[in-house]
Image 1 (cartoon, rainbow, N blue to C red):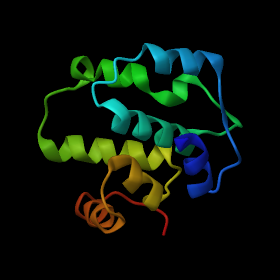
Image 2: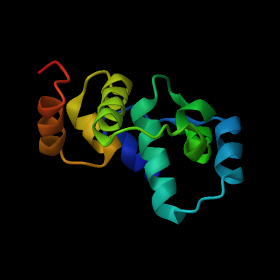
Image 3: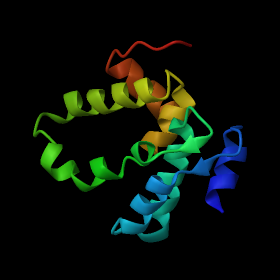
Length: 121
């Protein structure tokens, strides 16, 4: 199962999924099919701070409502906000933030420099 693989990949303790999170996974529409599920689980493993993945860590509510929450704005400020959020969620870990954003580490470093986003090295 992807949960155990991701725990090993990110050197996290073995995690469990709460009953509420499991229900949320079952109720989700999954337009992206198994790939989307895989990414949701990987992101939840990265975000986990305890030994249990909660419904909040799945971030599925945000995914369903994203079209309502997206503010039309120039691309560069939007990109900067997204990168800053990824960096905050990962505690400034560039490699983890790059994985969340589905870009390479080097691409994220270039964007950090271009957008003048300060990060710990």
